[in-house]
Image (cartoon, rainbow, N blue to C red; front, side, top):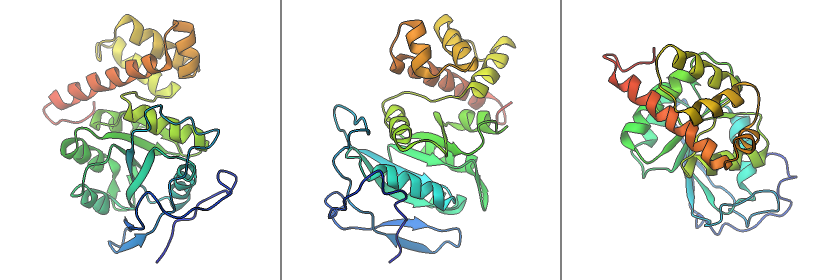
Length: 256
């Protein structure tokens, strides 16, 4: 039985018996289409830096990414987390699509480029099959030209692969809670499109995007706007939903 490397031990120093998955493996599907059983260690009580959701409602997470180092980083972050449960992972487009026959996940992390095709197909299929699942694009390049395509396909957030463990957990929780994540370049591109007519933005949405495009974080934008961070994230998610509706209304259903 193979295992995913847990990454740096600085996140959790102590190993525990599996109490969360009941000793049951979940399947990591490789590009070769061979399913390898993966046994994850327990989901441990939240550590001092994990900022768990107050309700501790369980978030079921799936990953579709061929980057073993990134998968290991996500698993390392989850070692000290009691409210996010990894349920399955895939390393190719074909196996990512196959995972959609399983029980729905709450959040799915998807790479925009996979060894056998585009992650866009997985995003579109996940949104159709699991309308309650929030999809986040995981990439090393925040200036990828296809990030807006991923958003229009249904993604509700963007996660840099070099994110700190606490940021990974916060973004997963925020997405599950109805928020959306964004970076300055995405914000700038959306503003440019809006000035050409679509998507239409409310005053507050435009203000939030302007601040983020200037380099302010969501927290900093929230303080300047005198609203909560969740409100700013909700503005972003609302803009994304409008972009997705516009894309779906086009004859080819594709991004402009």
